[in-house]
Length: 151
Image (tube, rainbow, N blue to C red; front, side, top):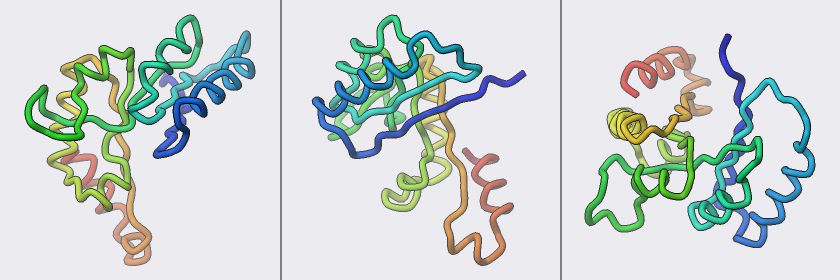
């Protein structure tokens, strides 16, 4: 049977104080409850290390919102798989619709990221889906099929 996943992507929300507060609330709510799902939070990069510390001995797992496919180098503003592992991340979101549309990430780039994540022992949360325009054109199946095959 497949493991169900409940993942919260915080996007560009919550500073460090907000992260501490939200994790505290989540831990209180989830403490002692038996879930048939993996619970994952994906806070902003600036909160990952603090989140990792706060999640020790918790049922909640830590994920990152993105990563770059290179292991290191002159890639200003990017984060590597090794960096994510070093702060305790177990998961990474890749292929999010915003990364595809706003930052023009192609299926080929996402494929490189997925391979790199796996190489570093991170579990990719592979996002797929069509835009509203693609849905209205009736090409949802083709778009999703291409994303899966190329991603």
